[in-house]
Length: 273
Image (cartoon, rainbow, N blue to C red):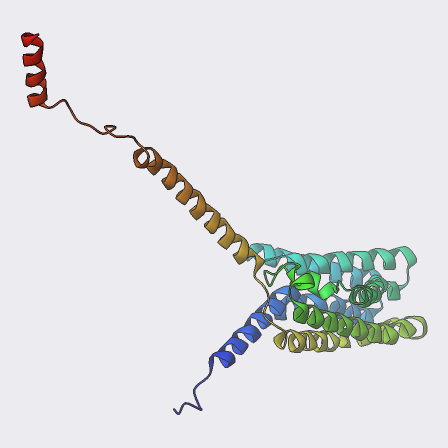
């Protein structure tokens, strides 16, 4: 291998940054299992409803599979935030559909959530506090340091938030007309089809923006280093205080017992007196 073929330090650092970004995005958005937990309840609902047009059976089946996914997460001692969010989403959909008797209302809470999230991404990006940065900052161990200390990452988070917002707005622009004009099965299958591709596109764009951004500032490592430095300073001060009495003691402070010869001479003088 020639020197030209050997990876440089900059290449290694870039690869490490990409790997860290991929791992953080995987953790934040749940990975493959998170996508399955997002799609499966809605897929089961529309499949059953397409076959027998039974709202109650479809809703109960979707809610049951969501609960099973939570139980599996708990049994594996894994994080349950994605599964729990799925349960709440399905639960609201079931309540809406049961209250109105309209099977299409099973999808309405999720559609409203998507629209609200799209607006949140765009508004927070415009305000200079992009939502994607608030979500990923703790995962990257940088918290909010990117707002004031890392303008390159702030720019990447802003671009990512705009990307998420525009993609979700586009998804909403497709789904809401279908909610009014299409039947339940058409809406359901389109919604299932639009679960994964827009999500993957948004995650990919986020990865592209963050991979090109400066590395995060690990504020936790900074705090730990400051704590160690403070302990070292305290230890140094304590050691200096312990040495002070000996260093400033006057003559004779460490004198030993009286010299025998001196004592004898003193005794003779006393007898002579």
